[in-house]
Amino acid sequence: MKNILFPLVTIVSVLLFSCSNNDNEPTTPTKAAISGLVILYDEGTTLLDKSNMNVKVVGTTPLIQTTTNAEGKFVLPEVPFGTYTLEYSKTGFGTFKKIGVVHGTNGQATFISDIPSLGQLSTTTVTNVTAAVLNNQVKLSITTNPAGNTANRRYVRFFLSTNAQVSNTNYTYFSAVFVAQINPFEKTITQTELLSAGFASGQQVYVRAYGDSFSNNAYDDPAISKEYFQI
Picture 1: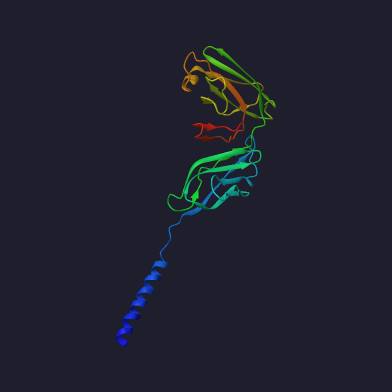
Picture 2: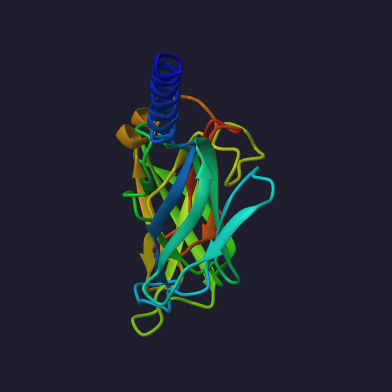
């Protein structure tokens, strides 16, 4: 009986040892947190409260979302690895998107290092735009309401296209944001600038201007193959 019992005990011991080793093998993670922060401004350059901006991972079920704290920080927990669109929204700021966020390529959490600085949506209305051509230059005159002055800066941006339906989503060229401290605000566009923007000599070019914020909320939108401006 002793000769039979010893091998059975040995076999049982080996099996228990093997099971123990398998149980301790590390599992490969399939999800982790996405974190980041935002900076919020008014229409100009004044910093605002960074809290309570909603941030969500578009397309997740159930929806993974959170809000920023007083420092503008957020953490989206337990997000399955993949490529996502993050959507930022808060009343008065519209909706900003980060499209194509790659999460979990190294099996770890993702920090959004490209920090968005977002401005409140503009309350400036452009009431009139005129254009005059002189010596191969175009002089734009943009009238706003409220009127811009040194005590009440307003911000404007214009878009150009050969399409008469030029807009903030249908354009060939967009300008930088300009500070309007006089009314009307005037801007000269040179022939060189027009050629550099992709227009040819003799083309008819249309212009549309909008009020904008200093820290605009534009983002690259693959759906229109260009930057989308919330104006």
